[in-house]
Image 1: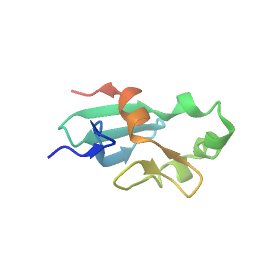
Image 2 (image 1 turned 30 degrees about the horizontal axis):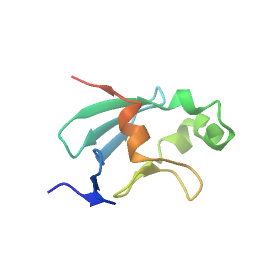
Image 3 (image 1 turned 180 degrees about the horizontal axis):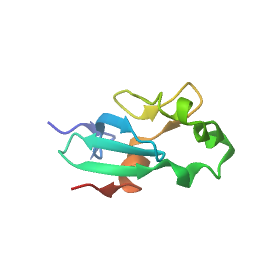
Image 4 (image 1 turned 90 degrees about the vertical axis):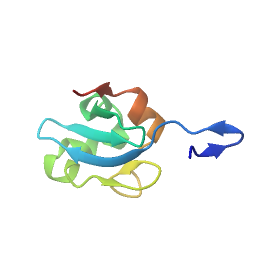
Length: 88
């Protein structure tokens, strides 16, 4: 069943995430899609600078709403989906 908020269905949500050595996230969404998100595109923003450390980057976690690294660094589910590309 699709989740609805404020009368509109929510977009796809991540159900698994795997970091790569190339600062990309391989994400599986609840609609069955597998997509690749390039985190390097976010390095230009001060909030995401700590992710340039590969050890820290690989500590990515997942909750019901977003992927995150700590209380200050996360990527919202809509951005994660809309800025990612399909993986075969």
